[in-house]
Length: 157
Image 1 (cartoon, one colour):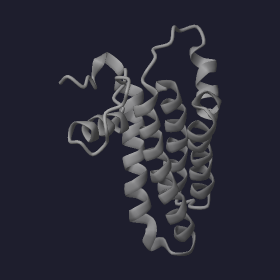
Image 2 (cartoon, rainbow, N blue to C red; image 1 turned 30 degrees about the vertical axis):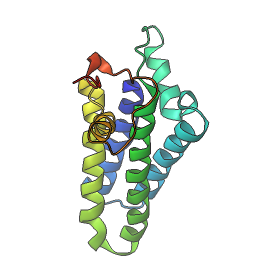
Image 3 (cartoon, rainbow, N blue to C red; image 1 turned 120 degrees about the horizontal axis):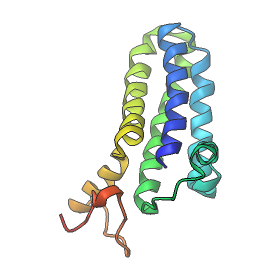
């Protein structure tokens, strides 16, 4: 999943350079749509078939896997789907009205920060939000305890 986040972060870098450095807003709906499709495949079909996961596997195929609980990753990918869908919709408006730039920019920076934290440090913000939601009782406790990087989301804490 960290490799998948790295692949999505590369898409984010491409979006930032095109949309915010070059002011080429036409690229943003296409890139956000690519991420929406990636998240939908991961959530609806199976994460192992998501394009970012398939690409990442090519880079890390010789490494032993580190299995992470699926339930909190599904929550995190759902969060990613919501964020990229909002970015996609706002980027369509941005094509006609540059006043949407700040909203799109803020959401893109948030997504990019989440991807960076996952890729560089193994910190899954969506997983942390899932754990916090369990802790405060917003979500009910799963039947099986989620497995997190370095036991960061142990339900006993």
